[in-house]
Length: 369
Image (cartoon, rainbow, N blue to C red):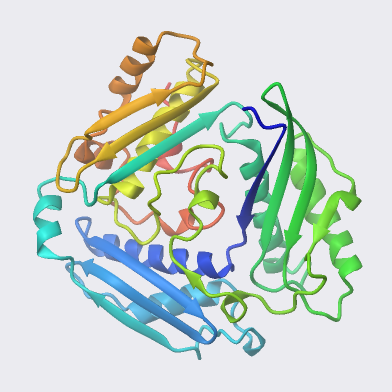
């Protein structure tokens, strides 16, 4: 870590891109619920008064795509006409067909569903073994959503973003330098009141939980000074546009492929989960203070064509011992990843907001004893 200040961002669950991720992952779950061998690659686009679903699904059961999308949109709070995007009234167009046979023949034999490069990362900055900036950004976004959903701050509206800047000294986080919050709200409520109440109800509790504090004047709320209506009416959303939010906030590298809307044979998803599993366990076992695992696959082939581990000079044991530890834990072939991490089951919508890593209850976050 050579940065003196490092910044990461997150978004609320009602952000347009996250609406899309959650719809796409709800379709993945619906397919896997009926058929553990289902193949899914679905993209969602949302804009003012419109949602569009497109992609490929091969499943033993027909899925009610429009109903799935509408349930997600309703859950996220788009229930008022003022949003110009309504769970019951906005059109939902569906353009979904089956997986191409040229791809299916390789995947059905246990091969990777795509080619690509994936990374996993872990460090000792937080109890989650994640970088502090992205963890705080996620917790703040989640806190904003909970304040709206529980009507603690009932004037807030769906959508929102957070941005956290952390000061580092000798590679360690020592202070929160700045926060940026963006959230739409009823304009009957003055921005000064919104800022004060977000500070009291969301910011302070989150920062104190992680041992930090920040003066209120170090917070920027709604940089333009006004935000009344968020969501797809103000910003078009697409599946997979928040890949850095989904992973390590920019501190760990990224291979470029998104996760949401893809069944686990797509190694963009399962390979990245496997790499996080290895990196986290390397750090948790005390073998290094920071670890990044890289893997690369060819479509249709079971075994990776390349894999590597970088501990950034923080290793406590030899590279050979660390590699042997990782090999014992998981061999990184596609069938073994799916089996070891139990990925062919409906677990994915819960990953589609506030990040795919650093969360309890996910198999790739488990620490071996």
